[in-house]
Length: 79
View 1 (tube, rainbow, N blue to C red):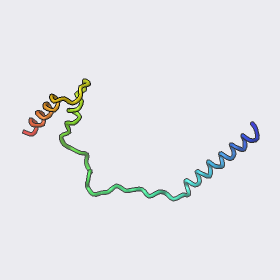
View 2: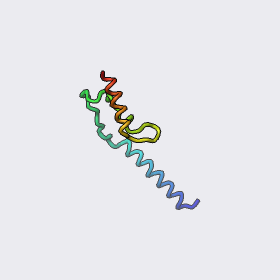
View 3: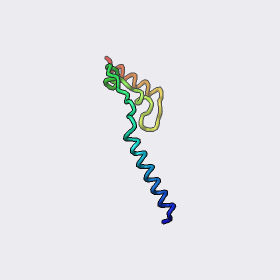
View 4: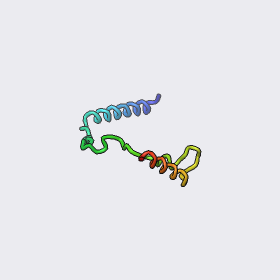
């Protein structure tokens, strides 16, 4: 190996080690704490027929028949 390559590797090692030391010495950034106000404590629970209306699984997207079928199911479950 040439002398220049050896010096380059040495300098690279020195720079990496100094950078690692700075990462340990520098103060940590403030971490934002989550608000504990009761909002969104649980996931949304309710009727969500959007995915059922939009895609039927066989490649067909939203149709009037899909919307009608979902509204009929919702009406039947509310009764």
